[in-house]
Image 1 (tube, rainbow, N blue to C red):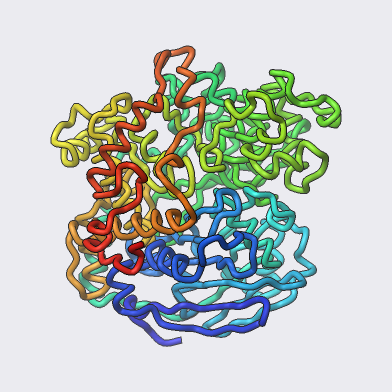
Image 2: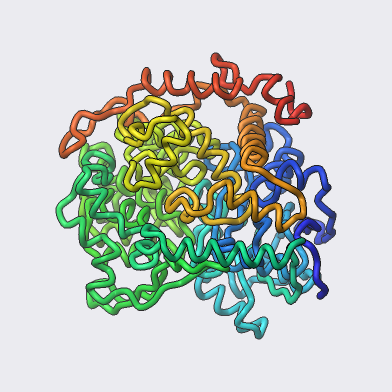
Length: 632
């Protein structure tokens, strides 16, 4: 393999039905307009998915897009984007994952992998230095994600092979199945693994020996070294290294914003047992894992043997996992939550959706709306860890009526159960909300309502609105002109804050840079991104030009959904977030009523030049972003 430049982006197309493989270049114009990763993915999805296509149809592409800076020395540049049409929402879906898969795919000669069609028998892709094979995977079907990764490395006789695999949940088309990437990372939310399973594709294995060269290699190395020094001096990055994202648990609980018992409470006794600090102090933590070019190493490696829960040897758990599988289900039993996390990871299920559907089922049982005969002997009471673990196993294989129902997500389950169960189904657009209390955090409320894939934090991460550091307050002042607006429980200027962060997050995903060092620790903002881009490509970029590219991508994603019939009424929050105030703790009485959300949406649409009645981007705003081709 020879050197190639970062600007020479290549798409690998694989049709599993016809067993055809071909490659094509990314045009210079698309590279300029959409940068890489998520941006090019969005363009490909818009062009290749006609309106009304069934997400489970063979024509629905599954697109793996590397970040532009994957494989370079740029700090924390290991993120990839997986894009498809969601089987959960019927809308645009992008999911991000870390690890080393993206760097390896680039070294193998490709920046994007677009998979269409479906195999009648299980297969896996083997990509090595521009050579692509579609191989039988019958021997891997039914295996968990970790066993699949291990067996592929053995079969291919190379421990440095990087994989993207599904588990039994993806094979059984659980609607919240995910894709395990590089063993310790996950492209979760919205059913990426479900689409992969529908294609009969068990895994993608990649090995590459090529190199990629920035245009100004010495300047790029010098800037990367400077940024690494800044990350090393950052307090938030240090906390993430020491304790992972679950290091924030006790602070969130003390503030009364820890979602507990299906968002019915904001605090729980024993919350400290869910924290990263406790996981280390109690001896469960055995090591830390890093993604490509990352010095933070926020991933946990936990291990223990227990008479009650058996053995655990796993990654995590992350903050969302301990909230969804722990507090949301009324459990603070550390070993039970670690086991639940391991089961979800090995079955290949999104921990957020899995925990939330179980929490919904627990509340629905508590309210007497689930027929006891459908429980198959399980006692689905809040805090019953053994019942939770059993239900996770059953959902992955769709064993039993209740598990089969829950495997299709909360929205479908609530429709089937009936009564008022939809009122405590914490979902919007069909996707379960991630564990941020949007009754308290108004910026997140607006961002979740607008998120094209559904209500979660991984399209707009706006931790700055909590004002927990000088850097956070300085950023809010930069955006709004007033650092006193760095508080979560006000609607003032949330539209400006959300719009700015949407653009930033889009660039994270385009470049392949982790959001933890951009919108959590605030080290790599637009100025560093612009300089890295310029040195990498030889094309001058500014904060304004990258922000505009981010806005172009966000708008194209909106237009994908508009083409599916999406209008403003879909920009909503779960019923509980808009109608049931926080009932106890420091945030008692807080809620985000529909009227307040509508005011924030009005401001956001005005800022963007979108039709306030429909939420559809106006022609003038589309033309300003060079999106004439999507004008109605």
